[in-house]
Amino acid sequence: MTTDRSPRSAGPPQESDLPLLRPGARIFVAGHRGLVGSAVVRRLTEDGHEVLTRGRDLLDLRDGARTEAYLRDVRPDAVVLAAAKVGGIMANSTWPVQFLEDNLRIQLSVIAGAHAAGTERLLFLGSSCIYPKHAPQPISEDALLTGPLEPTNEAYALAKIAGIVQTQSYRRQYGASYISAMPTNLYGPGDNFDLATSHVLPALVRRFHEAKRDAAPSVTLWGSGTPRREFLHVDDLASACSLLLTSYDGDDPVNVGCGEDLTIRELAETVREVTGYRGEIRWDTSKPDGTPRKLLDVERLTALGFAPKISLRDGIAGTYAWWRERSSAAG
Image (tube, rainbow, N blue to C red; front, side):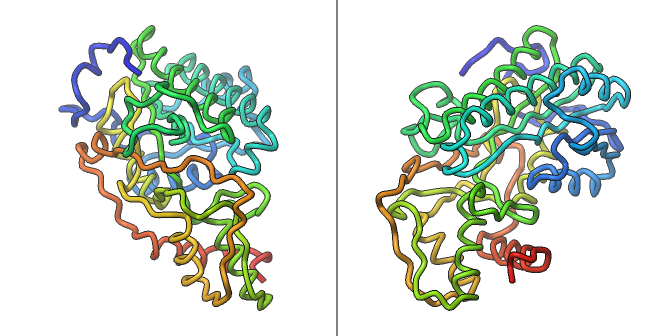
């Protein structure tokens, strides 16, 4: 998707001569208790910034008036919009209205509120599901809106696409230094392990852990196991967010991933190995596979100097250990 460019964003992505975010900036992280938001808080704090947060019990980000009032009161230098209603195939298929409307309300509220409060920088975090189901692989940012979406998460994807357009519109109309990033599949400490609403990786961790605990002879997984997916540790995403806040000021969204993928079957085998389960894996092919492949072209981000540091196996092992230490469900 192409748009008119403001003077500051002309040309290809490149490191700015002047920092786009001053050292020790005051940054509001929306969604700080979630998988992504908590990692971003950790990273920005390590970078020496003053991180501002507000719990859902004190501020419902779907409420535009209250969100604007809060942002006007605290006057952050930057906002990272990591708040969202998220879930896997089952959750998206069951509650499409909530995935569409809640995310639209959050985005409209936070982005418009940030502008009203005079916030100079904003990073909107979308999702790789914005791209067409059968987009050429690896998927470049230019693939946006070039074909039909994956039906099982269409409502969520449309909300995220609207967020991209909203940030671009604020750039075009007001010259706002607002940007957007599209992460691949994420995992790590803080992930959701509820089998009814989780994404594939934490769901596999829990399924295999419980099968080992209960000495189950087999574990049955959805689909054929053939779709290919890319996974990035959330701490690597947080590093990318820090880099983008200080070095990128373009209209176009930026893909955030590791540039490598594997089949769900291979992922399941890795999780089984990490958890120590020795039973059989069965596949229920009557259940949907989702998008056949979803590998991001990360050339734009790597040109800024980004490279992930956490291997998939090490990341899964760390995430498994984190969950076992903190969850009574781990048994």
